[in-house]
Amino acid sequence: MMVFLKFFLFILMCFTKSTAALDVENIANEKRDNEYIAPCFKSSGGDLGVPNNSERRGWSVFIDQDFLAVNPGNPEADDHNYTMGFGMSNSGMSNSEGVFANSRGWLDEKILGDTDNSYKILESMHTTSYGMAIYTPDDLENKSVIEGDRPYASLMYMSNTKMNAYINGESIETTFMIGVLGLDVAKEMQRYIHNDLNASNEDPLGWGNQISDGGEITALYSVEKITLISSCYVENKASSDISYSVSADLGYMINAAIGVDLRWGYIATPYYLHSKAPVSNYSYYSCYGCSVLDNYLFLNFKVRAIAYNALLQGQFRDSKWTIDSEDIENVVLEASLGWVYSLSPEWKITYSINFKSREFKGSEVEDQLYGGLYLSKGFLE
Image (cartoon, rainbow, N blue to C red; front, side, top):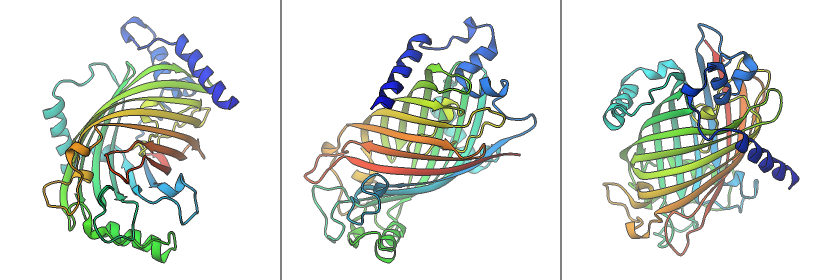
């Protein structure tokens, strides 16, 4: 309890000593601006820790599982809602080229137009990700449709992301994702984990009722803006920052969200590359030359307004069971508490416990709780 009390007192002190927003035009020393935005400017001489003529690259892998947060190792642990997700990301300038990246760039131009930040770009990142998300109802051994509970659903996807961070303490990230709903891969994978690996006594029998069973192509375009509102970076000592985000999704999900993110501890990673849940595309970030490595706690909250969710309501194909639009919860609360630890300048591990309030009205509906474990490696070329 004392640790959390000190944490919030430290955050409060830093918040009162920092400005609510950074006005670059009123601060003559650009290095001072950079130190406000990125802690590595303090500990690496103002160059983001990247040697000249080098490119920051990296990869990350992640797994989200409810058993990582609910009674780990217990085969009777909760196994429904967002029951599992996994994937990998590869970041580097090579991901800014090709048909997929060009498609995302075309959408950026058509949807965002000239809304891009006019300030100097501090850093840019390009990422390609691959992954899968699996959702199930509570009663896995029931082959029939379970009214009052969520339908089975699965999504295999790949995405391309561009992130620009600006000198005024803002970043803008856009993502274009394409995927397939309703494949049998999720069914076979869950049965293998439950039956062959003895991870659970329940045999999932209802996958024939999943959303878009047999497969259906889907897509999503996302945009997120993050603004640093307060920072207290101290070289070789515990530091903190607070940022807020606004985001929107358009595609198989239609929603908008606003959130707040707090960090406290030994921080080397800039706010705009901080690992969040689900895993950030840039969690591999390495601050070469920094005198401190990441070892910090984070806490974030989001309020999301939802208009449509194909993983509950279905898409164009008929599905045996879907949730009616009037039963969708239009406001959902999300929160994450986690720890980021750098094993070395190149290797990093993140663990988080994630909460999401119920997404629809129903007799079997519960809030969601799951854990996430992420491993990443950064390198220079």
